[in-house]
Amino acid sequence: MTSGPVRAEGDARAAAGSSLAATSWSRSDIGGLDPYVFDLALAAASCAVRSGDIENLSTLTVIDYSRPSTEKRLWVFDMKARALRYEELVAHGSGSGGNLATSFSNEPETHQSSLGLFKTENSYVGKNGYSLRLHGLDKGFNDRAYERAIVMHGAPYVNEDVARTQGRLGRSWGCPALRAGIAREVIDSVKGSGLVFAYYPDQRWLKSSEYLGDCGASS
Image 1 (cartoon, helix red, strand yellow):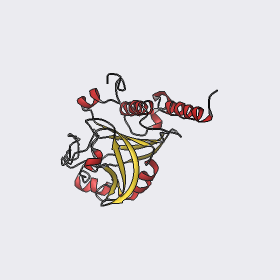
Image 2 (spheres, helix red, strand yellow):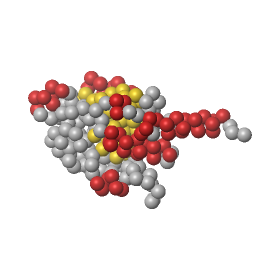
Image 3 (tube, rainbow, N blue to C red):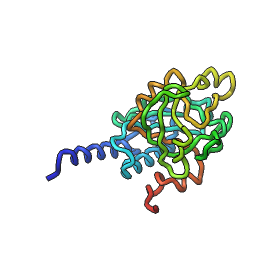
Image 4 (tube, rainbow, N blue to C red):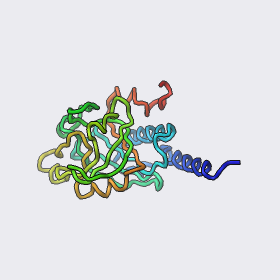
């Protein structure tokens, strides 16, 4: 006989699998996000769920670093309601480039953004105010996020006025920094049971990430 908890876990996995299927979403559901990038994010999130890296996935945040910083390039999806909740500006690291990010790193002191899949953890108040710890899941690409203090936080240099007057947003030391006025709300909505997928068409990452392709089948 199947026990209650096992059945509940199975139901949760089935629900997650349903929302992680690309066919469950239409183009109108994903705002201005490139469908190709969204499909990659869904594939990576699905792999993380199947691998047991996260349970009861509630949100999927997608960052498309191939877009200029002056454009909205961060999207937060409610995976239970299958709905887009936020579409926002986000800054990249000062070592990654000016308006366009072109360089990414997992190494300390580079001040570059990192690619790949992160798990959201707890919020805290630090030197950048209300912030969210991110646990890098992609080995070799973002798994030194803790060591590098890569977190999500608000910043006064992330807003449309700065983008308009400077031609780009201000830049962080590698953190995905949000508008100060929306940061706490976004952080509270994604902390604890969410994933963040940071994309750029970097071929080395796309070909070797454990969360893309065969989902670690070759490891």
